[in-house]
Image (cartoon, rainbow, N blue to C red):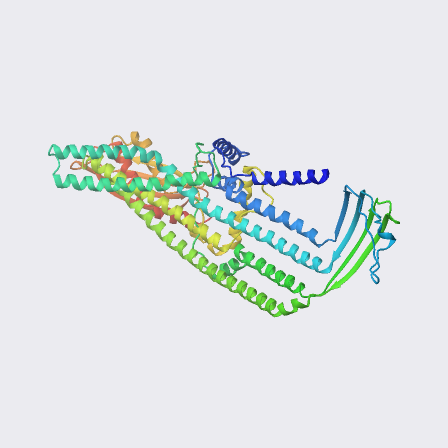
Length: 627
């Protein structure tokens, strides 16, 4: 009874220990430690930002360090591991066992005659089992049904891995679209930020001066209030545009998983020329139906459904099982302590036959559901492709309008500067013109970013791959190079109809300025050059002073003699090709300036003449005949 009491005490102790478990909240120290560990792990193992970031590097950093993409990669790795594990379900089962048995008394027994009911051997108990014994064995078992179920389960798990890969590709494509949109908005904000800060201060000063002029009676109240209203509206719009573009840099930092507080700049580079609207819509739709990860996922789901139907059918079929094993028992009363045993069994669950019609019906219904879901998704994808193309068309129109508006406002600003130099206009009007021109410039950058995002949606709707596999171990610079070459190759292959002449990058050109007439014309040369260069570069013209540059854009300013307190000014633009001395085009621009023309007034006139002929310059560069 001592053994029984000990056993009962052990059982009671285990039961009481199980009942003693109570809910415990996570402590503040544990939460703090978890926060510190997560912050270290989120931004660990990243290359430091040591130079301005270009688009390709931004995309490379997002693909390497974005946490959403990392999550999809881990899910894909887990699915692959599960697929590898599920392959072992098709193997036979081999079970090795060993054990020890003990009891506190003998396992004695008696026998009786079943006919007479009399006890045999005088009713004395006998035993053929020791109180302590060791056992060991190894058993092999194999079932046809288990093999079939394991085989189809392994195929389903392999398809689940392929589904996770398609989801990873989808996240990658979405990241590319988001980076494309955020990057170009952030570039616009960075370019205009210094000018904005300066102009916002001048605008506030202009408001104060306008209010002071109203109080002193220098401006009529109605005129002063109208000016203040217009300037406040322009300042509000400027602040909204700046905020919208500035937010893009924070969004880009999040996409690249940049450590909070890290200051970085974006590379100042010319805006890539946007392609035209795709004309091969039918081909792009077919490409989308072939490439989209969502449809590939549905293909794998259909295979999973088919495998599930076959698994259900296996349960209806007869089963054949085989068992074989070697056993050992240390019981000395046994005649044979070692022995081999085997079993071959066939079984058939007749009741499962009744479920056969339901299994067939369920499989057919599931297959029809998969087909209906895939068809609905295909229709949605076709719609996305057409909508993306139409949005791109509208965004290009919006960009054209924004560019024209920016040119008009730049010309108005040039006239305001020239009028200020001639004392024909007040400094308040100049500030208003500068704010309006900067707003137009913001709008143009924003329209360009929207156009880039719209093209990214076309790219995304078609389901084009961003990168080949096996790039995770490469450096950021290597991934950026791979991204650039792969994207260019894919785009040139997919959008051959978009490579129209207007989509080609404009060649670089030298700038030459010649001034004749006027008393202070020679002293104005430096300001003229700066004003013209700024106008051209602001509108994406490439100025190249390399010795081998073939094209030269020449500006000849001709100042007529002063008559009646004014003088006529003529600007003659000429595009020359040095290699064969061909004049590609010529155009002039005329105006009237005060007799005592200042260097600032002459620079404002040259800027106005430049902005007025931007479209002409582009046409010259595109249509320039090759030597």
